Amino acid sequence: MIFYEGIPEHEYGRALHLLRRDSPAQAWGLTFRPDGDKYLLPDHNVYVCLKAMKHSVVEVTGCFRLGADGKRGAAQGVIGLCRAMGFSTVELDCFEPVAPAWFAAGLLMYRRDRFNTAYAPSLWLPEYGKPDVLYLRKHFGG
Image (tube, rainbow, N blue to C red; front, top):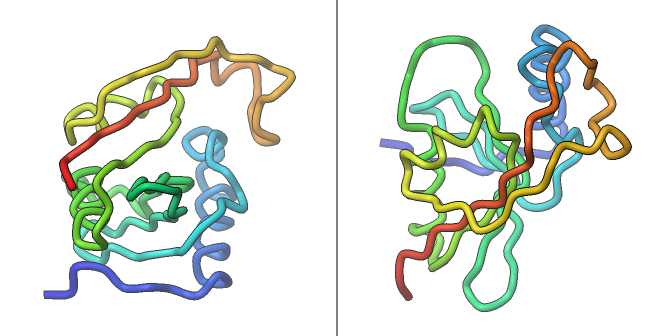
């Protein structure tokens, strides 16, 4: 079974561009050019971008699913990928509506910031609401 595979920058960028074009109300909060190495989790149809930090910490700087295939477990797949790569802690920030998937994978919130329209992503529109930004972390040893 292929657990994950590295993908070129242009493939990741194209997939993200198509998602933002086809579903702006769902993808408005995604970072268009996230930092880090890009991976595809084919079992979940999920793209993830990871940025190695210091002391065995990895930051998820981008994570998105293509299609509405109803597959679950993508967040847990990202955690599994981070563990397989030898990291002991995963950190990320996300808008509040996406947080339940990360909570289900065992991440805990350590900070919350109110939505600030001055820093809103370029595709954000007022009708999308003003969700808080949550900062999440999971430590699994090491």
